[in-house]
Length: 505
Image (cartoon, rainbow, N blue to C red; front, top):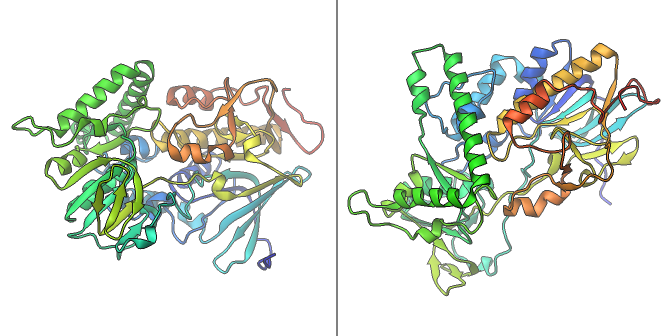
């Protein structure tokens, strides 16, 4: 058994403790200090800087996979003319927001939350965080707000490829990209076909000798203008906040319509998406295609997995220019020169980038305990996509899988503030979702067939098939449920101590 790290004295008590200083954590802090100004709070951030995903990922071409008018905060307009923005621009936006509203002064950097224990007697969470020296620092709070996302920042997913040690070149996962990786004039193979792969390929192709996207199966890819023409037209004609709100709602409604169309008419949607890709691959003059359309025709229905977005068709432009190509095959093994495929073909490479997916990690691996009993997340049920059954005074900010992450996180923060106001008004110290129908059918919290979901979803809370246990993935429905629905429903139990709950049962 390894020795336990030394423990320092308690670091203080806060009304609310936010874990994670990324896009959602900064947004949560803004809503909290605006709507509940009497509440004290702190943000625990495991890294040495804020920004979350946008500070951590450094691979070439990193950008948003949804438009910035919905990925941006509801309270602060995105003014950059690019609707599909690069990572550094998004990071600057998050940092500027934190500084503008004084949120950065509440962040405790290099404090990685590792364990949280709830006491019903004290109505208090004790949160243990590991600091830069490896010591455990204890914080206490009345409410815990988890904004740590659901990806494992310690490493992505890479299959165990046979013969990898024989390869003379370099192998890197995008999550571990460093500045010393040289791809100029090199032959590069990007393994994967998801959002990271379709971002990397055109970016690498600008200076690499050639880039091959090697995929086991195709993915649906849609093209979107890098600049939003409606936003450009509104800019300068109406106030910035009005232009931002109008563009935001336009894009929300459009994304909802596209998703619903794909779900209701999958065959029609499939034909439409594939036809648009086919047109994008054609030579503008001769009509000759620069790639096989089979490489862009998935076997599954649209939105069984997330659609990949490419701004201004940059991926297709790289293919038309001959700087990039797509190969659909399976890796048999690494060789000294590259990759041997199941078809017998060998792809020679100087650099192999394994864009093979991320790893899911619930609450960043935080250990939960309620009144001395460990909580197994997979045994809980999600309440409104925000809280977990039998876990008091804890909320989780998780964005949409079929739309912008921030849309749901903004609503979640607003709901948490409503909940805190309600508890203060009525003198409650605890709130906890309790399952009302033991016989209700349960389903996985994410219904995607993507590999990263299948690999890790069993460790996450589950959802029910009816409100308030169902995860709707619909902004309009969530807006009604989280902003206006009553807080004291049959499933939410409020109490003032560990004694018999007072509330609507």
